[in-house]
Length: 295
Length: 289
Image (tube, rainbow over all chains, first blue to last red; front, top):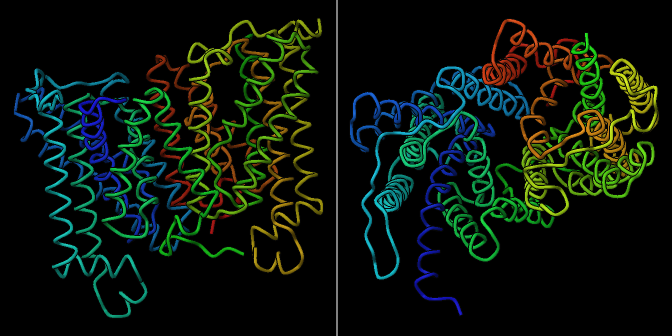
């Protein structure tokens, strides 16, 4: 019989992990669904957000929120830089595979550049001694609450934008049918500029949070990008709701694995789960927007 | 001089791996990111058989080729159902799954500590006790791989593979069975990768899961793409270019971390340049559609 407080602790940890995965999945999905680029360079955006927040905090001693804002801005800037390459490839009518290769190259080039500039080790901020609160026997730390509140705020905000604003409807339209969007005389470039901005801001903020909490190293962000891609594809049926559910689900699955088996097997379970789903029904998993024609 | 022989040995193993990978990437048109997983299966199978069961190198190599070919054939069943980004994600997931297995099955694989004391080629054949002898042996294996891969891609099966890559609907309409072609192509790639793996294990006499991580897979695919996929010499050229970069940095006095960082940077820049300016690679091979 598992104690009730342990179940609540697992749910809390799963939610915290899940919120991070879900936010990154939304960032990935916004770029992927509107440009069809398998946005592995999300790892590079995370690095930009993480390093700028950590170094800004170290140099100025600014608090978490100002440092995170710097990370957010760095994420936006990094995504805009990456988007120049994507735009160039789109103009040349490069295939999706070529764009994926370019995105992968961007990640590796950035990781190498950060390793050269800041060293291969983990860089940590000077922020320590987080406050924590006990809700019964469940311990909730300040970063936990920050992740959860940011997640709830962003999920709600993005859902409202998607449902009630012209911007949200335009993003949905572009993600659903680019040709139709262009035929109707809409300005794709302007919309993509906004999409890259939102995606970069989310990823930069996640990078900053992770960097300020656990430290950041140049070679560690690819697994985050891949897990985000997994969540985005698991929830590919919708632009926003799918990645949120898939991200939180993956977070819970990981913590559950940690409890029942061991933390060392959590990646194995996540990727095994994805492979099984891909084997069972690859077309439904990837959804109509990303499925390619098969014989 | 010994270092040169070492480089020749390593380059030969990489050429075997890239020539095999080119069958999937260049000829079949699949962006497979798990070549280092196939390499790992061969290396661990060979190493375990030599260490635990006392098999000689040829026996272990034969078993490694067989086991890796069977593993890749199973992977091919999944791959034949997928296209585009799904192949990338599935293959990368398979790689992460396998490296996680290697890290966690400590009783069998030694976990992160790896397997040490693997018998070298010299224990099987006295002539292969020296570094030049081992290097010649590896070069012979690489040359043989190149020849077999060339024959493989220019025969009937090769034409079937090209037909599936260029127009899968028409190929199926003409009676080509995709699954059968995939199983044979992946099986071939597995066989070569398994041999490369056991050659590496015997040479290094120590292996651990980090050798076969995602970096190695991306490096291998970069070599194929930069050189020119689906060309005779493209993967060889790409291998030599990407292996030369860290050596040049090392010669200029770079430390281990600098070499690693520049390796990443060079790999990234070359991949971006390849996608943006030279999608057919240096030797003008297959362009992804």
